[in-house]
Structure formats: C-alpha cells, structure tokens
Length: 379
Image (cartoon, rainbow, N blue to C red; front, side, top):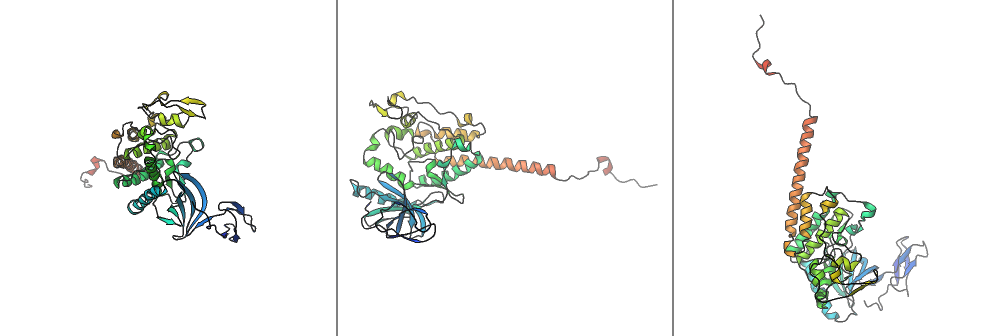
C-alpha cells in the first residue's frame, strides 16, 4: 500500500476525547495520550477510510479494522497490495469479485461487501465489522461441549446463507468456524466471501491449483476438502465438506481428520495420493513426510463421541464428509433435514406439553352409569 503524504496530522483519543498531534509519527505506531495515558495505535487515513488496526494479510490483501466515514460505521477494510507483480491482473480480478458480491449476493445470513473503490492508487474493499464473535472462539478444552440445540440453531442459519450463495453461483472455498460469526444481537452470518474467493482465484492464476496443497495459510488444514487437498480445485461440494467438518467440531469438540501437524492433517483425508514422489520437511516434527506415509482413516460417527446427537444429524454429517463429492448433499437438502428434525422436535414438545396440561387440569366428578337413569318418585 502506498503511504507517502497520507499520514494524519492529528487523532482523537478514545479515552478522554482530546485531539492529539501525530505529525511525523508513522501509522500504526503505539502511542499514549499525554493527557489521560490511554494507549492507541496511530491510525492511517486513506481519504474517507480510517485504517485503525492491522489484523493480517492473505493472498496480496492487507486487512484492517477501521472506520468508513462515508457510511459512519465501523468496518473491515481490505486493501490490495499495489506493489505486487502482475498488479493490474489481480486488480481486475478483485474488482470483478467485489462488484459481483456487492450487487448479487445479499442475504441476512451473509456478511456483505458494502463498497469497493480505488482510493489514491489503492483498491479497497469494505465490509461491516461484526460486533460479536466467530465460532472459532469456541474452545472445547475451556468450554466443554456445547448444547446440541443451540449449535443446530446456528448452523441452520449459516446453512441458509450458504444455500442462497450456491443458488446464485458463489462458492466460498473456506467454510470454517472462523468465517461463521454471531453478532451482538444473535444474528448468524457467513463472512469473508470476497477474501476466500479472491484467494482461490489468485491461486488459479499463479498455478498453485496444479500443485498439491501442503499448508495453505489461507485455509485451515482441518476444514479443507479432499479434492482441494489433492488438486487445489473444488466446486460447491467442497463447501459442503467443510461445513460438515464445522458441524462435527462444534457438536463433538473434535476434528474428523487430524494428524501430528498440518501436513499430516491435510493428507489424512486424501485417498488418492500424488503420483509424483514428494518429500515434505516439517520443522515441527523434524522428519521427512511423504504423502504415501499418511494413511486415510475414515472419521468416527459423531454419535460415537456424543450419543445424544440425533441419528438424522449423525447420518447427515457423515454424508457431508463423503470422500467422493458426488455423494455429498446439497445445502437445500441439508436444510430439508434440519427442518424435518425441527418439526419432529416441535411435535414431541407439543405432545409433552399437552400431556402435562392433562395431568395438571382439575377433573370433574362423573356420575356412575347406574345413577344416570330416571329418578324414582318418592312415595
């Protein structure tokens, strides 16, 4: 990102509201207010966008928490690195993706692309900054197992968003707990469609798709589909596999496929090993790993780990984790199973409630049959 002649000369302290002179201080330098001592990062102003905190970089994209003055809202701001080789080609790709997502992909369960624009030589993509948490904040070790019904409510909302995306022709390519978020009002959204799709498309342009993926930092090794691990290429059914892994993890606290390191974890779901011999050195294990040494082991049924998981959900997850993409259900089919299960649960709850009402309702005295005849006249 170009930074010359764009630094702010002042910033607002969030502690006391005072105006601080930041002349000559590099953006993102840690400072403190001279009046109240509040620590801040010196923000970076890019016209109407205020980049307040760098949070990472993925596939030529720098990501910031910030503020969009044009919409007066906290935002997630993504900036394409304009110093990369073949910048014009990647700029064209980013513009196409951003325009399609912002104009076509709109649903309450999908975090939208609000705007995209080239500002002072920097192409920026703006999405809302969700004021909640992602499912990746879940720690089985610290929190134990989550309530089954609560998990199902969340994944059903996320599945609805994915069904809409697939219906409109958009594949996410990185479905994982990190990219499913719940805001402060309890709304569930699938996030990072732009970033995930741009990364996937960029890999195709740089011929990474023809290589076996060892450790793609943009995609978690636990959630990657077998076909993407083998060839770098996947379609909508790859999203289904990743969603199945997400459900498995949120319900059981365990991953269906895992290894001693990221490389082994990726290859643990691969049956067809690469024909070309590849030695992969992993510093964590201090040994050489070949894909052929990592055995494919079918995952355990979720119900084996947690018996209270409904049979229908157990079977559904195993279908989503099918090695062959053609055997995996579509998101519309997944939603149908969710709806049928919910209808059955509602039916059972209604029956139980009715039974309780019958037990607690006051009863009337009913005359015996012999007393229902005509009354005899008194003599």
